[in-house]
Image (cartoon, rainbow, N blue to C red; front, side, top):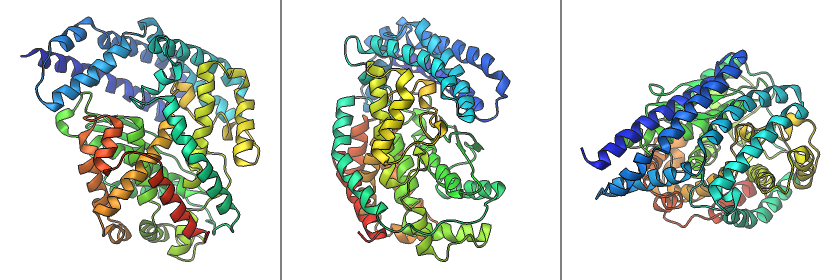
Length: 489
């Protein structure tokens, strides 16, 4: 075997162990007994220690120095292994283990504090998480910006300043569109009760409709919907609300976008750095285009209206056009994951600014709730009513995912570029979607983006698929046209 083969065999074993760690996380979010949390924290810390040792193994440096693949795939594999290795060796093993232990415990503390509406119960462990992540960020940044080092984990080759510049280009037009829409009459609302078993059955049908392969996946319930795994084991979760089935249905479609990306990657890349989505921003572009540009389109909502009528009977909506307006209703609300397309990115901008301030030290954890509430009032015009609708609503900070939030908005930007190209490439798309056939769209995304996994850098991945330099203009035009027509602006 060549040196390159030795490196790749070692890498596949490391990736397999990483998948096991991911499965432990999935279990913790879905079916793990609550009392198992302390033991699970130790289990996660132990496997993280093994992973850190492998990822920082000196042999990796030797193999990287000696390997000389001649093809583009081999060169891309080395690029990603080298990037990961160089980041890993900057973080002491004891610190990596401590972060794994504390964040595993913090996740359970957050869930209980959220249920109890008790911010004070969560802040001490969050303080530990922030301190450890700042220590990690300083080790990674080596004198540079700590937050940039955090972002690199989720959106490689992107900085906080670059993200802020994109958000600045978007903010004024989003605020103006929001104000104009909210000045109009609200669309009709759903009425009645939507039982959970029926929601979950239709949720599974929607997953299959969008191409989710249930022979290598499954759908479960969780407090916070997510997708987990890659390759031949890609699992998703959803949640239910008997008064709001859209929460379940669109969470499912969103997570299927993530899962379909992972399931569609070239099998030759299995358990290698290229065998997963290239960045969280690109990942989010798939979940958002599935959920919004496809799932909330007039064509597809017409089909969904028929499915819901068959499943639930009369639910207070008279026809497909009214249903389309209801699905896309813009309304005041607190929860990021339930936000409409117009306001969603404003939720992300709030979190982006707050977590940047936490990482820089400009904001103390003890002041987080007040800072969140003040910013929310300024951005949305009304006050947070309870912590679960405010700074306790998201799991991300409890598990140390600082730098993750802005990738949600980047995903929307990327989805805007992809939607523009998709519409040009598949002119009969709306006719297909009206029949509940998403294969034209999902096939185009698979062939032009998903199958390549991590072969190309994030922005290159979007540019190759869409044919344009990624930027916010296509998204803003799409939003202004769609909601301008819906609300007769």
